Image (spheres, rainbow, N blue to C red):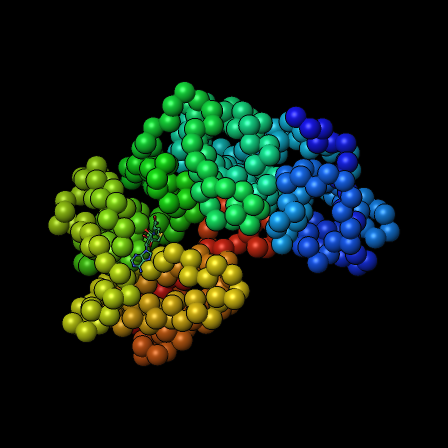
Length: 402
Ligand code: SAH
């Protein structure tokens, strides 16, 4: 393996472009770079200098990306080697122990990329198993080393789900498969908020489950008692729907376009002792289904809207805002008096303000007197570094239609 600490590859920034690095923001955009010297292989560790020749950072180089350097460390005396990754992952675990006051849940995010000072690395733990994503040239280069370290935290095995589009920006192909351990199960059982789940790490979304919504599923559970009819839109494998039943709702309809997600949802419902009368599934487009409910004057006591990302980036923000407006306006119209709404956006490009405005204008257009009862976010195992606000992507609003 090449020597990653020799600093053979050097990046010199343009004058004045060191400011964000001095605030510990870990991205260097191509426009900030004056010159690159040395072996420009993807994933190579690079040393970054200001226009005055001062050392600023050591990072991973990705020549194809519009962010050609993602910083590993701002410390000149910290080489990027095995002990670097051991230490960062150890720190990530210590933070999770603090977050959960020592009582780690069955399934949680151990490493959340930039928020854990490991840009391009996502690690989710499901009991003794780890499922990870190597989303950058830098983490891809150190994949073997990182997965061997992860085996200490996930002794049964480490599986790769690097089938994420962000890899293409770094010129990497999509990859999945076993990295460490003898074999990896197709289904991983775990408990969340007292509910039995099984995620499908090999073919499910993300690493198999939307761990980022755990706290919000808990909040929903706590406010579902007495709801006669719940509508869980974009249900995936039914996480919110099961939480509603566990919290005392009488019945829930889960709507998703994915037949396989709904099949797992139904299996999980029966695993938790809920009947098909209580937990229903419908394979349909949510936009169309909401319209059909509006036309037939169907209403609900509780509606969840947890759509996929409508905006990949700022260019698509306007179109995304219209999509969010559309479903929120329809949902507002379907709420019974006193009905509750839990609505989310996981598009990083939609900031909290814009999402709040969309929901407010949906309420106004639907002529609903809406009281916001909560501003929601991703769970604490997906922390946001104050040096990297881009780490915040999941926003939610809960409220009641008076
Ligand atoms: N709330 C879920 C996660 C939702 S992910 C949980 O807590 O686990 C978004 C889901 O939306 C995916 O399952 C995807 O299949 C579904 N989806 C995407 N577009 C859709 C559409 N137009 N209509 C219905 N479902 C859709």
